[in-house]
Length: 200
Ligand SMILES: *[C@@H]1O[C@H](CO)[C@@H](O)[C@H](O)[C@H]1NC(C)=O
Ligand SMILES: *[C@@H]1O[C@H](CO)[C@@H](O)[C@H](O)[C@H]1NC(C)=O
Ligand SMILES: *[C@@H]1O[C@H](CO)[C@@H](O)[C@H](O)[C@H]1NC(C)=O
Image (cartoon, rainbow, N blue to C red; front, side):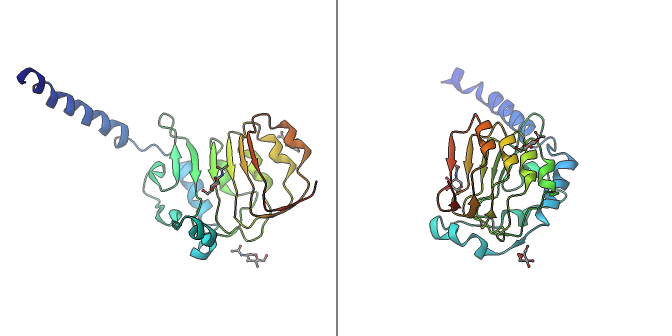
């Protein structure tokens, strides 16, 4: 037994040290990214009924952005995922987050070019159209705008997001045709369009 237990405390110490360096030693988030995120937050008011459909289905909406604070590392903010090496924001999951407002093409969201997964499902974008700004997010592999009170036609520029493999536009008021530029989306595996007013 003795020879088994002896090395353990040293190992535990090393593991704790490693954990400390991985999680707590450096701020990952650059100032540019945290200010882009905080500006993005200012586009919205937070109202629970914006995520009414989420609560109907999952009963777990919450205003994630309300806890975002200037002086903290944005990589630790609720809904934000960063790449652990470079500290780039690579994921934003603001589904079911009470957002009410719209996202204009000049929004600072589009200054976060490393985002790969963007989930804005179950919010209230106030019957606005999808801004062409989304096409600046060239690294996007997942875009989820399901059940979020969007309307209008889909901008052809979405066809420029060539890495896109999941696109969920379901349960909105979209209309018009699916742009022919979608044929550029060679990685597209899931295209979910149900419950809209598309013409074929
Ligand atoms: C929602 O849209 C209406 C009508 O276009 C507008 O008057 C209102 O200011 C918008 N609200 C928000 C929060 O953007
Ligand atoms: C994006 O797509 C639009 C419409 O398909 C096209 O006209 C435009 O040139 C593209 N922009 C870039 C920067 O690739
Ligand atoms: C979009 O988000 C909703 C809510 O989180 C989820 O139910 C749905 O499966 C998502 N769609 C994709 C393609 O991930």
